[in-house]
Image (cartoon, rainbow over all chains, first blue to last red):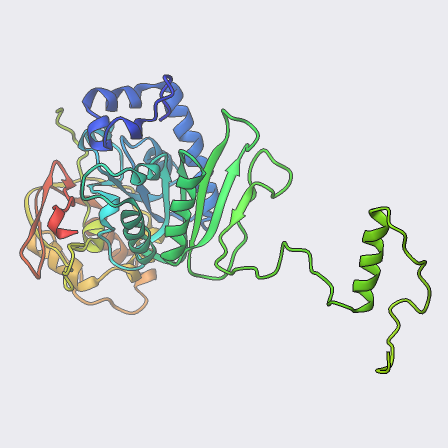
Length: 280
Length: 131
């Protein structure tokens, strides 16, 4: 949740401390927050691309007080929610959410058997993994542990759609690098990229299965605001190819260059760059 | 903290849980020690139950249900064409979705390490040396 003062919650305290009893209640009773979470969840589920009219077994990471989980229940899905904040989970219980709740730290890895989940969502949570809240924390290591165990507990071909608030592009890159290392394909979808207020980042990850296209971002007509993962280094691209020295092309380019410089250049003819015999 | 009437850990989820402590190779299934159980009523969705059954470790489910005295007439082995056997699916639904553990422990079969369940929420937080 973005604070009005502009200070990110992640800079103030670890999540289980920041979301104390009072904060947990405030979060959950804020009608604007509820609406935003609902919209984000709806969008995330849309991008999960689950089979129509089929109740699925889903994981909600950083489920908090169950705002996102309630939408999953509305869609007739059965879900498991994980959060590191006992206070937030208590609020979820009071609200009588239908999901199974677990008190857990996703940076410590998943505690599920392989292939468990048909889909995974996360709303406004995974950026918390980028902070070292304890001396022993190593964010890249925690991120890798998270992504690699997440991959394992998803069914083949299942998707994880993780909405997050990255602090900056370095943070986003750190996160996507670890996701790739863990074996995920996919990329980042940015909805409403041109609006500071409405802009939303979604990390869309595929756990194996056939290569699929990223969902189209909202609020844009072209796909310029999506970035696919790639682990191939594109060699030679981006640098203009220079002609082989002394070839006709090279000679023509050099003459053109000198003309642009205003130097005197012999006119081109069919003899320009003609192959000469060895006696020259 | 208010008491709630919907504090749950279903046997469906128990069937998926494993110990993720570093170095543990056989952390499944977690032995269920339930001190407080509640039976709820949940809408029956035969399609969902039929889809979940292949994901389950059936013997672990039988073990867990039996250990808390809620096995009922659920068959110990899956029979062929269970997907179309409505009576069977109803029984499976009951055991998977309607029997909920409120208080208790989940014990790792390899190390004996206990993950406590309080108010229906298993505490899976690991200590520094377990990561």
